[in-house]
Image (cartoon, rainbow, N blue to C red; front, side):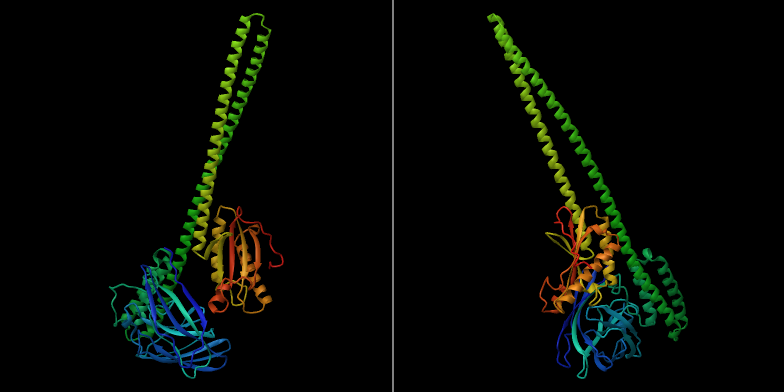
Length: 542
């Protein structure tokens, strides 16, 4: 099963009165595999070299939680001094939770784990930094302190004070938590444990999560190291219960190794799945080639039969010519006969030869008709089989690409969409996520046995000058072209690379969502048979 954890976010500029807060609500959509938690929170843009404060407000999960964050932006970093009060033991929220984690959530939806909260009774103080200038602050309950994505259990988030400085934006954060593989579990047999130190429980959770993620198959050595460390930890803390500082470092080593085993397991399982898909594609190509070989054999057989029929037809015509010559000779003999008997005999021979000629003509017509019918039926069967095989190949290509990138069908071919978030801000350079997806796309195209051609088109929103947008769209289209070529796509396959700037929006530029949809690079993949030849525009190619 292919496992994915996705965080999606759309950022909207919003002017709020001082002291206003967003609605505190969580929507959960449960399926057999995942729990999707959607939540809105404030993202604040902090001015350079000015300190300010925001309040931390508890959610419905822990309504008594309160606190304050002192925030200051300077020298490319933002320092956060956070104080929280009235936090409950995380075990009260569920036996799977052992700690609280502080997150900085950027407007585009990227959530970064910037620190684990240590509890002093029901209070916690932490001082951390983040490179972000615009972000929201949330606190979540987690199974251990080294998780990579926030769980749905949000216990506190930032709200504005009357003296908070900075521009305000809002973000709708949308992320998935796995129902038994990552950081969420619904195991009714797991009960709260208030006797074991939370840091030890967190180490156990890290190893449990790695096992559920398939580390026993895909990250055997890393899981073994984590399990050995956990065994050592279990022996240490029992002897030194009152000295948590002695075994806290060992516990965090277990969490680190467990998270590494989980991450490697997910990555290697995905590689194994892709390898299996490649092998299946190779087998399908081999089957297609065998079918093509059979089709060629059938075509050769049909050609030989046609040549044989042609030769038989020529023999019929030669026999007919001979019969006509004999009829003519008989007529001449009849004309020269001097007695009625000779004329009668000659006329009888004429009649016999004419009947023979008629029989030969009839047989000739039947042979030609049968040959024509056989050839037409075989040609129709060959054409239908070839079309069916092409349609199947095109469908498999569409399904394979749609699994990794937003893809749609149009009259000119498959349109693969790369959104703006896959590029560095206001630049043509590709982010790692974009390179990963383009690598998978190149692998699919290299395995595709059909004929295809590619056009790459860059688009921007309406913000900025026409010349700037034109150059940015051309640069992004060229960056995609260069990366695909680096991954093995031949240059003759890429027949056009264009930048359209802001001239071809797909929706309105009056909203942030519309502008983000208009900032895109589209890869057009079409069969060579159906694509109208287009030359590369040297003026627009970068």
